[in-house]
Amino acid sequence: MLNFAMRRILMSILVAITVSIIAFFLVRVSGDVAIALAGEEASAEDISEIREIYGLDRPIIIQYVDWLGKAVQGDFGESLFFPETVWELVATRLPTTLRLALAGLVISLLIGIPFGVIAALRPNSWIDRLSMTIAVAGQAIPTFWMALMLMVLFGLMLGWTPISGDESWQHFILPAVTLGYYSTPPIMRLTRSGMLEVLSADYIRTAYAKGLHPAPVLFKHALRNAVIPVVALASVQFGHMLSGAIVIESVFAMQGIGYLAWESILRKDIAVIQTILLVVCLFYVFLTVLSDLLNAWLDPRIRVS
Amino acid sequence: MADVSATAPDAPAEPAVGGAARRQAALDPARALAPSPTARFFRRARGHTSVTFGGGMLLAILLMAVFAPLLAPHDPYAQDLFNRLSPPFWMDGADPNHLLGTDKLGRDYLSRIIYGAQISLLIGVATAFLSGVIGSALGVTAGYFGGRVDTVITFIITTRLSMPIVLVALAIVALVGGSLEAVVLVLGFLLWDRYAVVMRSATQQARNMDYVSAARAIGCPTWRIVLSEIMPNVINNLIVIATFEVAHAILLEAALSFLGLGVQPPAPSWGLMIAEGKEFLLFDPWVIAIPGVALSILVLAVNMLGDGIRDISAPENRS
Image (cartoon, rainbow over all chains, first blue to last red; front, top):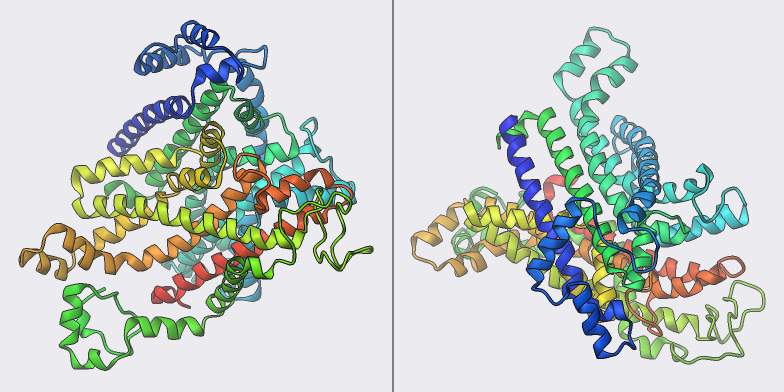
């Protein structure tokens, strides 16, 4: 296990470094930063002056090392539009996004696991088919459109929920439901197949044979084992939600890092884009390792292969 | 996927047949009389609800896109500022000239929806093709050569998987400028991961088959082994993933265009139409409802087709 964990962690550190390089170069290579900073109508002298001030005339490798060195110390530079430093900006916006993603994850687990269990108990029954059909059909609906439709229905027509902002918990209902809905099918599917496998295992038959009540067999013996891979999947889904937040937050005007990313991209606020890209990627890397280690710890077959 | 010659004509499982295996199969009389795998595939497809339904809907949308100039009642770009936001046919005050109403610039909504299908399908197919080429090349290379090559490619896949697609795509499109070509290129270079992962493991399995060893023993060059022995056996995976990636790309294009960083106005992209209708959310929700329904139907059709093809091409999954 230790060996596997070390290899996996080492790999993820390499991935993190590569990702930091990509986050830096992607933004640099695809446009001239100096022109973006100076504005469209700046003169050639202005641009070359800006190049000098920001050190953009140096070799790009040096610039990267410089950027990374500062980033490690928590200095991500200045935003072009906000008075705060980039780090302060991201740090104040991050909690909203984390809250939203967490709420979305809880919703998808609360729907996905029970329906997965029911589907496994009655495979090919109407409820199994119905839940799968809803899941498949739902995947075809664009997230942002679903968000807008929920907004029209529950916010405008029924007036049950606020439609934009993030001041109270009510503001989180519609965005979290939208976000959670898209993570439900994979969780449901995995719970279903896990339960189907576990329910046919010998120890379940033994438990029934010795006359245990079905409820404890189901919840203590079966579900506990079936839900293990779901926990690992949930960690990956959490990462997806952080990136899905960019669309959802823009629709609901929530002041999280997704919305901040969108605003910054539209304004070409490069330091902010780079930082958010890096932060989200690092979250991804961390969550993937977490899920891999969790899976390997729980299932010895993975770590030997 | 065991010995090909031993497969009875009515056996449920049949491997796709590679070059050497096909020659071997031709010598087997029982096999020669059986319908070809392709024929059986189509026979099964006809009886499969999800394939016929999804495929049918997709075909209808495809025809709509191809014959858009003949079908569209109006020019999708022609503005009529005196006839803005005319409601669709099911609402009061509808104009029979504009079945689905008109948008905020008075452009005929039905015509824009019809032409919009071209954009979605073009981006879906082009992206799935580009990412398919990249992903399969990486996957097959990693699976066939193994060892260090595999380690490097696995690392590339892991790195790609740790990058959030929407965020990266938005950032690049913002810097290079939004256009149909930019969206295809950016998405094509981002969506290859599933191809690579599946093709890698499929190739690893195919590589150890007897017919591959046989081909290697008679001195076949590597490129020929890969093209005529490995590829035919892993290609059915490719078709299934490609369908899902078409759907994925269509949804992503819509999201990018919705956020203002995809296909640019005045193009009738369905995602863009939803963005343009956002301001009329309160009084005219049909403006965003119509393109959203169009998108959902298209993606549902593609997904159903993909699900169905997966079902019938992997007999062990059939219930």
